[in-house]
Amino acid sequence: MSHSPTFFDYVCSNSDKFAMLFAFECLAGVLSVVFVLGTEPGTASHVVGILNLVGAAVLAVPTAGVLLKCHRR
Image (cartoon, rainbow, N blue to C red; front, side, top):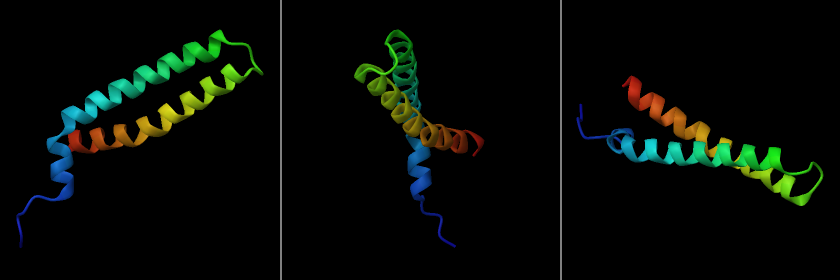
């Protein structure tokens, strides 16, 4: 049986960088919510804010999953 490190071992060894990435994604999400609430519905700015919010959520969910898996390990 081989005891060489796996790809996930490498990922978990860099979990501090993933935590910082997750913090930036959360900040982007919060700023997007503020932007969406501060613009008028139906405008291009409102649509861009919604797309930014969706994009931040799409990036944050897998990052949170990686951090959770590393933490439970």
